[in-house]
Image 1 (spheres, rainbow, N blue to C red):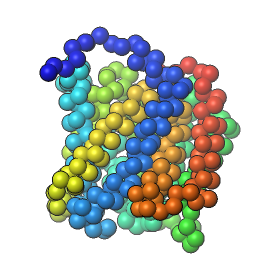
Image 2: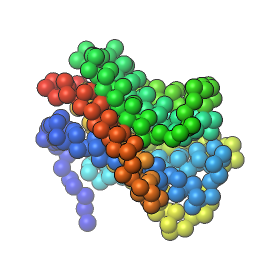
Image 3: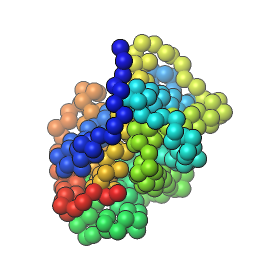
Amino acid sequence: MTCAVSTRPAPLAAGLFTQPRAVFLLALLCCLLWGSAYPAIKSGYALFHIAAGDLPSKFVFAGWRFLLAGVALLALAACLRKDVLGPVRRDAGALAALGFAQTTVQYVFFYIGLAYTTGVKGSILNATGVFFSVLLAHFIYHNDRLTGRKLLGCVAGLAGVMAVNFKPGALDFEFTLAGEGCIVIAAFVLSAASIYGKRLSQRMDAMVMTGWQLAMGGALLLLPGYGLGGGISGFTPASTALLLYLALLSSVAFALWSLLLKHNRVSLVTAFTFLIPVFGALLSALFLDESILEWKNVLALLLVCQGIRLVTREESAGKPSR
């Protein structure tokens, strides 16, 4: 059995990633995959015997997930006869910086923040990344300016995330640097790194770029994990399959997301990330045999969809950002 041998660029592929319907469906798929990580990670902690407060072991678990995802993407890229080694020879520093920021730093701050705040507040504050992306794009790209419609869409999307996470007494106005502050920092780092990745993808293949950043970022996550005494145990067919699923969803979602960012405006793509916690809540309820037809879930979907419509509606007639 041989892999595809075509080395010619596929202009139709670039056109596919700018078609409104394709952008909508692919962004939806990415968010659905990332949303499925919510119940999968919770199950993984149980299968690998990782305690709620065991941050080093969580770093190890995440490190192996992203390292495997990156290796899988690079293997696929090599199978498709893409230049896998060229970009790392020419831009090793840039790829390492992207992996360090987008994977290592972002997840370290996120996990630390979750250790000092509630999951509800963490999910809501993590959604502020859309605001950061829209704001950063305003100053970096002349054709991706912040408008009142975009701002209203972001507010509606955030309201949807708050709705799906609503629990009586779960929210308060307490804000600490170690808890809520780290979640916000993680959201900002991810937004900035995504824009940096968009620029980097203009001079290299997006699949190869994503593979290297995931592999490097995952490997760097293993250092503090093992260095601080973390580890994972309990490898069984079920736990191994779950880890491989998490790696697979990461490789697929991040690769598609990088391609979408490469060929479209930042605000158009990132608006869909409001769906991730909504999908996460719905899938968690489904796998935990809970009712998903609660009023808050319906309200969340309506608000998030309206927010996405407001942010992306004015973009649909424009040319893709390069």
